[in-house]
Length: 173
Image 1 (cartoon, one colour):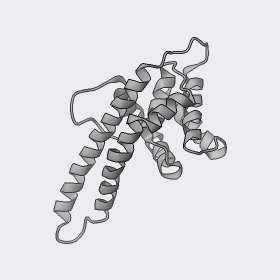
Image 2 (tube, rainbow, N blue to C red):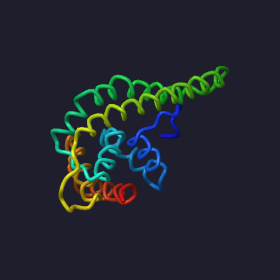
Image 3 (tube, rainbow, N blue to C red):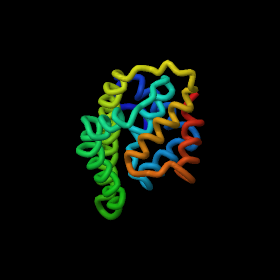
Image 4 (tube, one colour):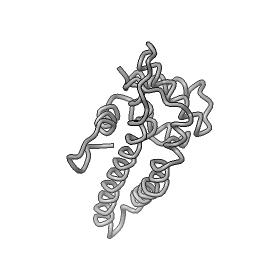
């Protein structure tokens, strides 16, 4: 994840760009994506919500995963990612320069699609009230992340729990 292609920013996007650039965050997010099938945008949104004091129930997370944001992710983001990854293996031979340029354009489209996914996620989060508990934002974020990962079929223990705690430590105040 790198800087946006336009100046239209919003809180979740700003949070995500800042946190993704921190030590170990990108690597952990990609590990969750590649090993567990997690959507990095929902991972970051879970952390963001926790940072805002918003606990997310499985029902709220399922609405994101199965609703508009999840559909956008499956139908737009994933195919663009697959195209970008495929073109990376094709950058050789006589057309290497042209393919590399095309790959760069696809990468920018993928980033723009992820930004749209985050806009859709943020709209869902806008309807979630911050909790009245005295629970620390980091604890809320960890619970949000555990709830999300359980939706993707992950048992929250061992290496998964350790990486999640490291991610929360790096991302939530």
